[in-house]
Image (cartoon, rainbow, N blue to C red; front, side, top):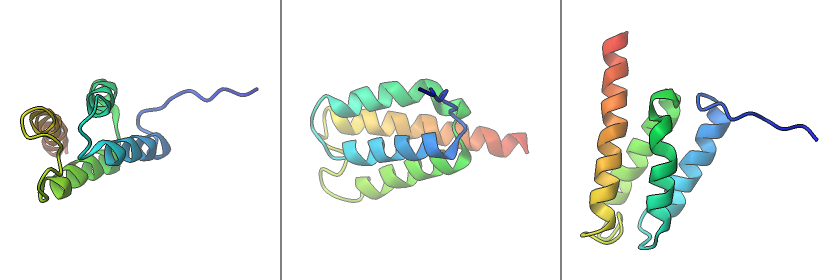
Amino acid sequence: MVQNKIDPSDDDFGAVLNCAVRYCLGRQTYMPGIIISFISPYIEKLSNRTLWTIQRDIDEAAAYPKGLGDPEIDKPMWLKFRSAVTKEIERRKGDT
């Protein structure tokens, strides 16, 4: 049995994370918190494509009522996560 190591910069890993984010957007359960907590430590290592996709998906969900879940619980969590993603995108622009 071959075990693959997780490479946060790999686009396949990023695609899995993007799927997880999309699944969780708008849900009012414990799952968004789990996914955000899992992804957050990897933000600095994720590919630009993964970060841009996360940012876009959150923005698109925010355009709909309850698109980010409960306004008092889920929405602040998503907006804080989006801010961290945006901060990393902006940091990389400064590195070029």
